Length: 477
Ligand code: NAD
Image (cartoon, rainbow, N blue to C red):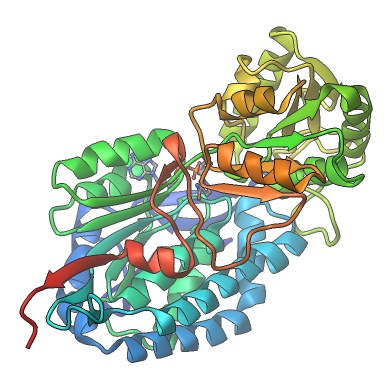
């Protein structure tokens, strides 16, 4: 059992003001794997005070020096990649292979993209060549609360910390209480990289404790949050009391539109993408929209692919999916699968209960429903488990209508070999991101959603801009 109770405040590891132990459960075994402490208001205040005191000095630090520290951070980050991956797999259940590659790997890409983007970014420049006396200056927003979830933890932490650091903001990170260990390793890396005391602080805690204290704190200038839409709404309300800048990366219910001329790998790719990270991704393609002419064939293929997805513990090597993160999520997913059955969707793979031979651990059967209509609960709610819904459509217009008929707007996917149609779809789909024919967006492109999937964009220059205020100066001499 790992014991890690201290917080990282003002460049030092410090004991919590009041003991408040919290057991982290390994979802592969249902056994406790670590004890952390949840912070109190005194800890939150100490971290915010440290960030506030460090802000003027960090803001005045030349951007080249800030970038150099992030460069040092990436080197150290990559040298500790295995520690990060092991911690993550243990506390949130991602298979070790996924933790090493996509999960921890994403952190390196983001940090490297921020370095490249910051080197190009015009932090301070004349408005244009015709207005030499008008100057546009980008200044850091100030003290930022960074609140992150457990599902892609290093991805989300690096997206926020990397951008805030090069922008010149100081910060207090509150990771999910479900996945604190990899965040605490990350704080060790920040310390080793040599960021000045108070620039980066970490306090563990839950949403209603440290989370709410940070989002309501008068000395916090901005909240950058990734998590559920429910918590995003609560945070917006709380932050409104002091009119903080709020950045929200929230849930999704992505459509994957498969036209009759889709390439032959499209169905398998769509099912496996849905199952990745055990379905616990905000951009999961959870609604597969299939054109009528290929519908029956796609349903059987999707069921076959899902039936072959192996499920197992996170520390097992190889390609499989792990457990879901905790008992609460397991129960919620079971209820939603049952609702799918009760509301008349056709179960073609998986179902309720644990997969054979996995009686301990929060394992869910890779599940596929066919004949889903878009008003059913499984088509409307973000399930956050390995559950795919297949919906039929006839025309391009109908596909657009179904895809857009959701409160979310994070990522949609299109599979067709007709380039003109793919481009029409990309314009018509109301989401922050559209990915076509299995081609991911490049690292460094903006990540974020429309509608109830959030506001603001992370990654590359867009991520840096989010942590900046724009100042217009007239009469520059
Ligand atoms: P969650 O909203 O329960 O918690 C996320 C974080 O917010 C945690 O650190 C939690 O302690 C904190 N929190 C919760 N309530 C809070 C409150 N009222 N005030 C302040 N902080 C609060 O989400 P989760 O279960 O950890 O993560 C899953 C959710 O995150 C899913 O809905 C998923 O779609 C979303 N997500 C979105 C993105 C994206 O970029 N759009 C990425 C990953 C995950």
